[in-house]
Length: 424
Image (tube, rainbow, N blue to C red; front, side):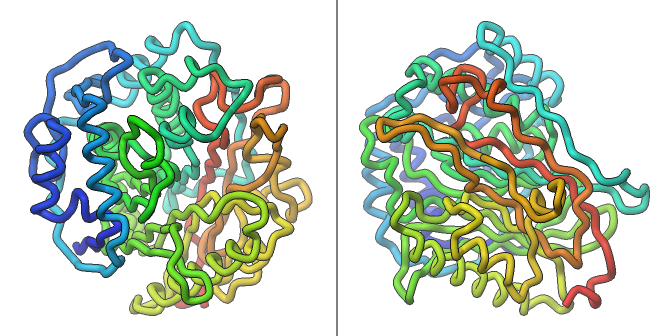
């Protein structure tokens, strides 16, 4: 197994800087996989961050002054070029947490909040026993620093964004649907929350922060945000992983992607999965189109190194409506991609009416920006999770007390079709 190391995550993966980082933030002793062992604690206060534990969520102290020091370190590293170096990763030896136990703890912590919206699956067929489904989650979880310090959700009380409870709401969503692969954007609590907790749930992961994250501009931030990819390490074997920095017209940009090559332990089939987050805001449509073209080019180059053609899944917050150039680029790509939600729509050609719905000082915004792309000749889409109704979302929109992000999660069930040599 090989793992790609790049300055995209140099602050942790480089041995010297790894030691410096953990000295700065004063987290407990670190195992060889970068995760601390701590004792069990059943409740989390507002000035703590989650770490892993044998059975329930636990906490480790991380003072704001330490976080600011880490922010300075991350800022100084953000200008480093993204040159890749391969390294080997040892298996994490954390004691595993029972998902049901952790889900019950989330529900207990969140008992004073209204329940998350109920969502049904739209299904096409039952999965064949010899070809089990692969469940993929795509979700921009909203960076904590941006939610509290930059995004200006005028109808969302600050108390609803309190990390001490919001992290449980995020984990509750993941635990409810039990995806095999989780693709997240705007992750700014990877090392102190998601990596250790997800590892204790049986996931292996890779994280690539933005070279110059806007989170670093927020006082008391927890470091840069970025893209994170998690996969069930019992279900899949990691063959390779790439951290990509996206370019536009030969100029490096602040957007990144993670691409992993996985082998299904059940079927033996090999496939690739990628997660990305393109440039936000209106007025940047041309840049997003160029970033999408560059991402497709890089994905095609990586796929070409495979001994035989393998199918691909690409998840992301593309910050683009279906009428934008970048959407058309993916739909018309020579990689043979299609959108999972489009495929299972009533007419087979329509995206959801929205994947994000928020109210900012500039007004209310309801948009379709998030997608799960897949190789149409490599996978069949067996089910997608429906979007909650306007009534379920509520008049104050997202985020809220009952939903932790301004973006809704997308969940798709895939099955392999056709043999690899027939994909291309």
